[in-house]
Length: 333
Ligand code: NDP
Image 1: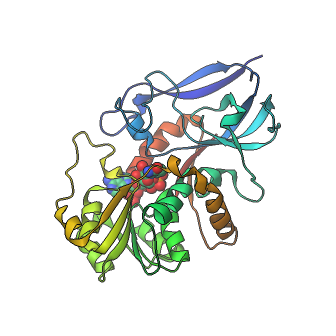
Image 2: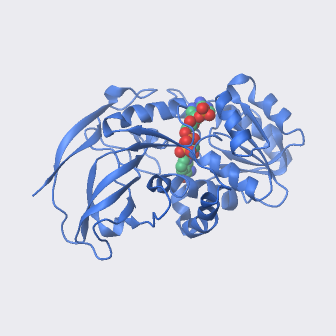
């Protein structure tokens, strides 16, 4: 007995901004789970900026999506049939076969989560991959230390909002940038950022200097481009940047110009360090230990932008790259 279900496939490789016609919704029959496998009904799927890079046919740290094949990405769901040891019907699990309503996969590729009292979708955001990205990027890659003044770009998004709040919890002065007046107000009023500005209001360099007149020590870069150039200008001696992502480039059809002030790195002894979250899996337990209690008692807040229905996942992805989300963009299935 197979399971009829639906999945989203890549129909065409986007040129510039993705279009709805770059995606197609397909109906498929899923085979029953085999030995050591589980059948999962997905309840939420994650929509992430890095997927844009996988839609291009280029070599990168993850293989490109294939034309005509289902997309994949983080998902949370409920086990509905199990032949895998340690996984029972009703268990809530996280796995990597999102962009479909059901998934069959090996038990070893599924992680059971304790969703007691925590919304399931949080395991795709603040307590999931974006949370780990913020945690490891700030603490291990940028090497946050006492007294650092921290600048976070993309600060109202999934990763940035947590990076800024972790720094605030540890007593740092934190400056954030985001793309609307509402997001800037959210950073200041809800998330406790000391300063925040809308990068669309004018020069990022000028706004950052005004927000951090004594300079910055750590930059958590989600954006690249003019934000990275501004951070290099604003850095104090021995400034450190965790290069997490460069979303201002993702839909570009031509390579973006590099920061024009690279020589400043020499004089100020600055470190720019890229990283990929999958190298930091050992930190999950620390993330859960530190951040889960802070989420539970409200010291850390997380927002979600929730779209409904698999058929709306492509538009959710297009809108994510346009900045329609505050906090984590997820699709409820
Ligand atoms: P977000 O929740 O931050 O969503 C993306 C946001 O990017 C949008 O809401 C929008 O907000 C902003 N944005 C879009 N275009 C631009 C632009 N041209 N300039 C400035 N901001 C823009 O996504 P995530 O938190 O999931 O990801 C944030 C970054 O982290 C991305 O660069 C992503 O690729 C990276 N990442 C890296 C990982 C790693 O392992 N290195 C792992 C996970 C994520 P606004 O309205 O403010 O413009």
